[in-house]
Length: 246
Length: 312
Image 1 (cartoon, rainbow over the protein chains, first blue to last red):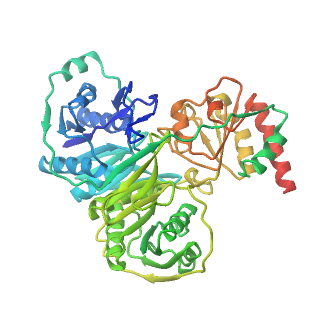
Image 2 (cartoon, rainbow over the protein chains, first blue to last red):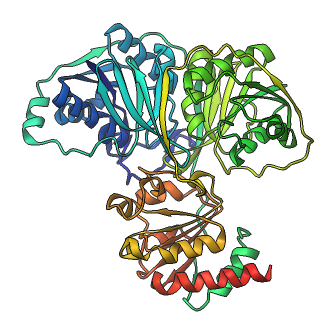
């Protein structure tokens, strides 16, 4: 079985969010990039578990510039067999999905895993788009994944609960909490990652469908109004008259 | 202009966020709704009150499969001749809308928080820490609407419901079983939410959280550590790795307000924080705060809510 895990970079969770060039560009000044947590903790680690238990071959794929190679090496240190980088800036979700779908189809991958979303654009778009471009089923927000021959058994989130589903390979899955536990790469993994193959592939020509035009920060919150434990009647009154929520 | 809205109705009912999507569409143009499943005419006709002029129902699809729903919407859009497609940004929308975007090569804005302005749509980015305008550069456009972003008004009358054959093909996914607690208010749909964290000290103390939730008619939620150690079910976990919610009122007791928790609740309209530590970071994101012990404050707040409800 060949598994392709989509790895995106994202700013560290604690990064200060600011914009430059007249609020048209994310200010990368001082920003530390990490592997998008959902891609790493859930999608990649579950793939590594299937490598360990079923001998799956795990590749990671990233659409990005050479500046993204440190996060790709981290994914290799966690245990992927090899990595591919599509040598292009991620222009929009469709551009990224088209590159990944093309690579997955022409290299015979059975299972494509993504995180449930990235923590920067939060679009939840790429996984579904890859599935459509591969004409494969798509299980979103999966919290469990077991492979038995050609059949995959999964749990997926539905509103207010979980649903157990089955699908055949090839399949695209977006992974959510519960799928696997985070792993910290060990020294042996980090050393091995230095010499694992990281193939650079030129992008296929794809039109962009969308463009981010401008950004803004939410208005600052006004100061928190404080109450003592014996002033709950006053609080409830304000929730009614001022906040108008009850 | 004609707009196609996909409405998820497999449960036999129409949830609030589906009405919101129809209302959103009606502010752009004349809405045709497409839906799958066996929901009754009477229920579907109610979509007219929020701006639908017609409902097309394909009853050959009986369970949720993103591939089938994508084909259904694409075929309905071609038949109606619409270039604008709207869907709720709920679990179904997150699965279907990207597929549809790739199928139709149509620009897609996910999680719209306001009506479009020309070809530009406002969305949240960086886990709610910023907003952005995204331009849809194609003639066909897809917008998913973030739940609880606009207040739908019921203005129209019931509309007609027609059977429709969407040529949706076969399902690629087989549903084996559904695990869903009965009766509880699903978190993403709840307008009022009472949430608690490690400050509650143990699962046996959740009674005071549930009492307040019951008095308000609210859903209950929890922080990540509480779900991780098994005090509460995982589907109640709100935050970056759990569910992101944006209720009208979010009451948090015994939660310090780590940045990962805030990422899941910072879209809430009003936040009330109860914490023994006056320096807890959550107070900076709160509208109303109480420095005090949840074991003392929650029952008092519950009493105050009951008194208020009795008087109004």
